[in-house]
Length: 124
Image (cartoon, rainbow, N blue to C red):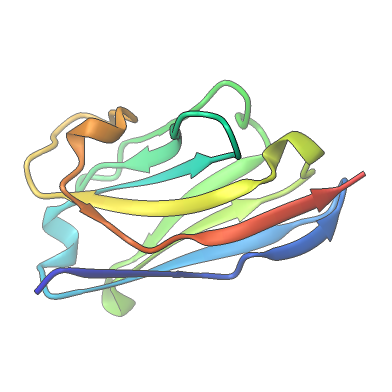
């Protein structure tokens, strides 16, 4: 059974940092594309960052230069380092995985497996 478990969310003041983790199990981690998404109240889920199994990464324009995605294949974990956080980054953050994606796409409907989400709140 594929499982994705996010952690690392919390409350931070603007300008601060958080590192989110996505622990994966039930599949061969390094064969999958992994994405980070977020959803703020009243808004649609949007892609934040993603990385393919061969290490190609992509970022939303709104987070370029501030967020960084990385993987630890030995630990089956994907990280999202978030720096210089802004109030508009406040959302529930989800990780997702898909075994068939070969390009770093951030379209939510392209991912088959999802975690339960972790809340990130950035105060001004």
